[in-house]
Length: 313
Length: 272
Image (cartoon, rainbow over all chains, first blue to last red):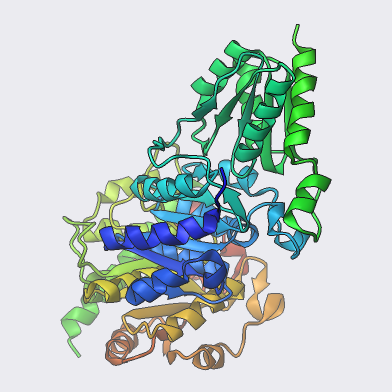
């Protein structure tokens, strides 16, 4: 867990590889290609790269047309703009006709950092998972991102891939098997399960380690696919450990925590604590400072874990 | 001019108009005004200009049509049925539960519909994408888009206009159905997009202005558009909302209202 790579970096590299293997892959960007890391795809395959300028709605609509003509169109922008500015284009021109448009949404969450709240998407998972036909991937590290890009190309229909700006530890080995829609058990435990996605997966592992020191055995589930959600794995985690903490760099409203709570309340109610942004916008600051201020550290997960374990009968 | 062709296209346009009022009347809801104004353009595209095969609706080499003003779905359904993509009888299922003929076009349900539309402002971008794909694949198909004049109040249209010119999409021809009305009233009163032609020119498009009900002008404008190289072409078609039905013409009130049975009879008499 030493090397840190931003998932957007892994995204850019994965696209180049994918572009080599599949001539139908095209990439669109909205004037952020150096940040979203699609720039190098454009260098490798200039005919298959379209810079659409600062016009996200048109980018998504154009991608829909490209997909309707047989292309697999990857669109990139910051998550705020991809999911927000172009929401209705995604809903009506992409998801409703179930077209092969893949949205690489980078700079998600508060770890965008200094740009502040206007650029920190804390509601994109909620928006995207509410759209019928949409698949939602939230990779935890570079390995998972590369696998998610490949899996996205194979999905018949739209996919939203949530990526980050800052470097995150590589937690998966090269032998990691990414199964879309199937959560990965990263650690077994009997007292509770921390269900995490994205950058919070590494923090969940860290928290589990700390909890072990206190005699609390926490399992860790990496839910890289928020939709379709691995209901079976979530219910199993509740049944086997009796308490759940969810962890996401996203609002506690509508994201992973909500999705997990929905599953549990209908299938296997156990004490749950959702760790995420408490219905608030972020602000400018360094990524680590923001994670601390908004309650998204391993220490916060540890105290949430103690809380749910105490609530168990 | 080939008078036989002219007569055939005029007859098709009339038949399309009859289908429009009938199907909307039967559905009890729908958009007659903007469907009728576009009937001549759609008749020319589907019965003369476009390279299509009703037996192969997904033929990769086919020309594409994007009805950006998706609420005019009846004009497209009528043309597709008349052209043999599905049975004319099916038109009477418009807007009914379980029908493939949704209130706005669904490309996954109706053979021959190239793009799902209905949310205004989105169709031109999709047409751009199809045109880009055509160039990328070295295919010589052409893409046609039909926009409403109220629709161009959407900012996304101008994003698409900019991009089509930037990418030199000369395999794209857009029609602007300039019938001068939108749901709330005359466009100049709601929010004027004028001067329309100057705007398209300024965005780098080849612009023609025609009478959108004159088959000959539609044919020659399409011919000229095909010859344009290095830029997209827009044909601003001056039309009459509700064209062909005396009591619907130039009435904003007939934007989204279905004719009652006795009104339908009068409409069909006008279109006899």
